[in-house]
Length: 300
Length: 300
Image 1 (cartoon, rainbow over the protein chains, first blue to last red):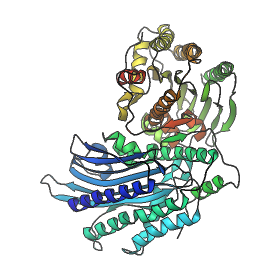
Image 2: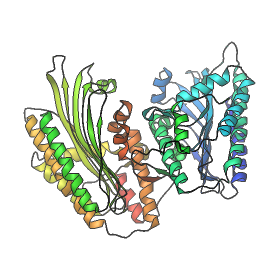
Image 3: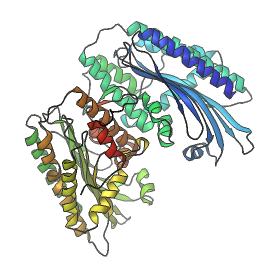
C-alpha cells in the first residue's frame, strides 16, 4: 500500500504542478529534492512571483524511522517505527479575488518490533480560503468535494465537511480560516471498508482537486483590483499565518520534530499585514466575508 | 505591592509613550481602555504609521480571578485565585537600520481560599532585534541593562542575559530572535532579597528602558535605505512572527485564555514577507547579522 500510494502522489504532484504552470504562464516550479537525516525525504516544488500565483508549494514526502516522541503521545503508543507519506499544497494567488487553497492527502503505517504493520490509515482533505466571497465559487468547490465523497458513502461528505469546519477554526479569532471543504483522518480498515476502499476514496478526492479549484481561478483571475483589495488580502493572510503557526497540528508537528523548515513553511503567504483592530466597513464585501467566516454554513 | 507596582507601570507607560511620541513627531498613540470579563482589564496604547515607528504598542493590564487551567498546570497548582499586572511593549520602526525592541515587566500574586497571598513574584526583561548589526548599539543596549543589574547583584546581569538568550531562541530556525538583553522570572522573596528589593530591581530595569533604546533610535533613524533593506527587514520580521506565535509563552497564554486579542497581537509587525529559502549573499551586512544570531555572544 505504501508503494502504491507513494506512486500515486508522485504522479499527482506532476499533474498538479504542470497544470498550475500552464495556468500561470509566467513562473514555473522550483524543485528541491531533500533527505531526512532520520530516514526518508521529499520532493518540494515551489512557485513564486507568478502571473497568477504569488507564492505556492506542491510538496511530496515519504519519511520513516522511529516515531518521534511528540507523536507517540498523540497516538497513545510508546516507541514504535513508522512510515508516513503525503502530498501537501498551498497556493497564494496574487489577485485578491482568487481564493487561497490548501490540500493534503497522506498515508501512515506503524510497525511492531518485528516490522509487521500494526496500524495503517489515510488522512487529508482540501479547503478554500477566499478574500472575497463568490457564493457560486463556494458552491462549486463544495459540490466537487461532495461528488467525490458520494461515490463512496452517502454520509462521507457531511461528516468530512463538518470535520473540516471544526479543524480550520481559528479559535483565538473566533472565526473560520476559510469556507471549508473536506478534512478526514484515521481512515482505517473496518468491517465496511478495506484499505483498498480507503485508497480508492482518498485518491478520488485527490483526483478531484484540480476540478475543484482551477475553474475558480479561471473565472476570477482577470478581475481588476485596487490597493484596498490587496491590503484586505494581506490582512486576511495574517489570519492564515496565525492559524498555521498557532493551531495547525501538521505545521507544529513538523516544526517541533526537525522537519524540513522551508518545505513546511512554504505555506506562509508572501506578503502579510497586521493592522491594529482592523475592521471592514459595514455592509462592504469585506464585511460579507467575515459574516460567513463567523459561522460555517452548508454550501450544497 | 500590587497597588504600588500598578501605579509604577501606569506612570511608566505615560513616560514611555510621551517620549516615543516626541521622537516620532508624526503619529500619536491611540488609547483603548478594555475590561476582562473574568476580572480586570487594561490600557492599550498603539501607534501606527509614524515617521519613526511603523507600528508599536505600549500596553498595561491588571487582571485577576480564577487561575486559568493552562496556567494551573504550568505552576503546579490546582484551582486558585490570582492577580497579574504588567507593562508590555513592542516597537517596529520603519527604518530597517533601527532595531525592533520588546520589553515586559510584570508582577504576579496567588491566593489561598481565604484570600491570603501564598506566592508572589516579578518577571520581565527587555531585548533588541536588529535587522542590521551595529556592534556599538548592541554594546550600548547591553551596557545599560548591565548597569541596572549591577546595582542589585554582581551576578544578575550574566544570569538574566543568558536566560534571555535561551528564552528568545527560535528553535525551529536554530537562531536567536535578536541580540538579547535581559529576561527574568519567578523573582520571589528569598533570604537574600525581600519583595521590596525585587520591586526596586524590576523598576530599575523598567526605568532604564528609554536609556537603553532611545539613543539607538536617535543615532540610526536618519540612515537612508533602499528597497532591498526594507525587504530584508520584512523577511526578518517573519522570524519575529514565527517566534511569537510558535514559541512565546506569553503570547500563547494570552491566545489560549481568552485574552484581548488585539492587545496581545499588537506585537506582530505591520508588513511581513515570507520568501522560500531566502538567504543573504555571503559576507553581506545581512549575512553578518545571521552569523551573530546563530550563536548568542557577550556584548559587554
